[in-house]
Image (tube, rainbow, N blue to C red; front, side, top):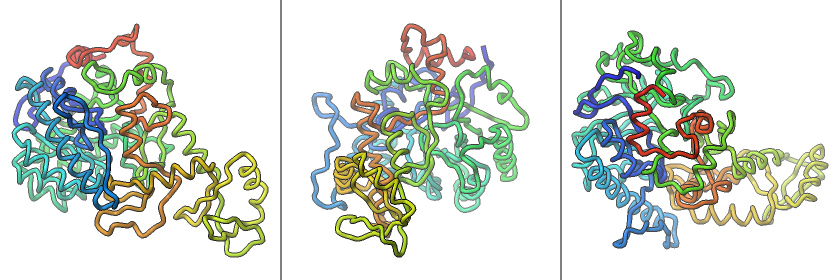
Length: 458
């Protein structure tokens, strides 16, 4: 049994155990409420959350408008409705215990408008906002307006320092904690900077000490650091508890909380997670956000990585040319042999990238890429796949066919059983599902059983 003292989060003393927010529709009102009911901090995702019809069926997020701007407005409407729905479910299922937090991505489309809409419709249900994937400079201001707590997600002391100096210092009363997500261990989008090597993980303890030192410089000794990424057994993190250098700490469980009876993911997730081996979660720069992200290696991810390999630069003049949708493009003669081999293998359609290069895909792939780009609903503030930008309507670059529609893929992963063709975000310790005796015999615990197991240290 690991010694855990109750800590104050969002106005109440609870266990320092936090459910990691997972969108789209993986962390919802049921999972959040169950985690809170067990005495911790539950988190539902407000990233395109599900809402329901009068019969309790999930309302499919179908976009019917002809223009991208109109589809963007539809997306906002879905997001606000779903967020309010899940907040109310969380409150009801929490039985008045624990704390209820809402997770959003700062880089999601219309984040601030969606935040306002959900809080205006369900403020009484939500105790805190957790926000990452970007630099949420206005997060504290929004939270203070509604008098709820805010929890920025950072991956370095430098990022928190920039946020604090520019904005958080003005709204200290509602800063509830700082979530540190290790960029080499956490699932989903990761906060690697351009100066950091994705292949060389840094020591998480040293990075946490650096973060605490910066927080102490700002007189934030009483603000807890919530450690996310790589946490599985608390017995492996005992040195981080009641540690003088780290100060107040709590622990976030994102990947491990997927396998519970309350989690809404399809049944296909369990055998997939149980079959993972060490190294099956990959850190790649493929996301249309432009951030690195960690996801389970499957056919979709493998195809995207192979697509990057079927790429050659464009040159100013050459006798070797290809026709890209009516435009003649020159390719260096030294690449002729491999390009001709790709075409022979069926990758006969060249597509331009914003990096002054050409990739080669099959006719079926090309058709799907173009259709997905055409269907863009503006789910991100800026998308390199479709070139959408919510402020200027375009990033100014051509759409990048080397990426993918993240809205479509995550919706399918959450609601469909074809997991091999869709994005499955997960932390790098997901392989431990198959090694942990707790899950022997394909056992799936309730959230309360999982919490009891975590408190035991394992």
